Length: 282
View: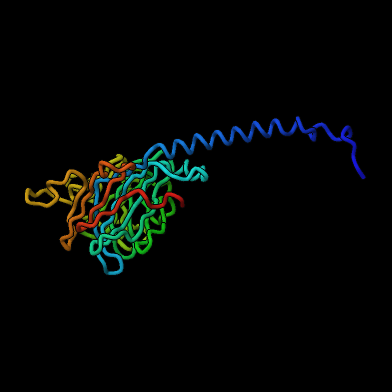
């Protein structure tokens, strides 16, 4: 049985359907066209954070750094682009080969703040982010816990880098709770517990809610990592630099002048790794 044209409901008429569809389609095409142009015309950029820490993963020495990556290359993944236009990442690099073991995002949501590595060991990696403390699996960088849900830190957790630090004397990550208590996570563990009197005395006046963490002697974290020595191989390096316990120099270099993208490099024992090309389409 056929239906006469005049019997069709109003919404079915061609002019009432195609015109709105054309307007919506052209608007979507224009939006993604502008988005694609913006992504491809603006270069990627990365900047390495100041602190470099060393530890062991499966018995091999690694260097851990964090960095910020700006930009993306996938206009078809709009929700991901909104999150990762400014991406805070952590990477672990073998000091023996200079090759990255993994490179993962630790903080994608806006607004973001400073990021810094704290410690590596016992199969765990500890990183400070804007929202608190993040614990990663040292083998592959997978997130184990944090910023919320770390046992012993209480709720809410303090969203401040100044509330977290690393106590080298006892090899534990220390943290300030919302109740003002100093707790510690021995490196390799996932839960915090109250520290002894000596550690509490050392950190009670250091940990606070400031955006910049500091070591017990008041120096900034990267100064503690490198120290000051006029004959130190890092003294002539303008960017973050440190020497591993095995004697490998780890430093950062500015982007190549002729490169289209402004991506900083990590140089480990003379081997260069460009930071910022990983994880663009995850």
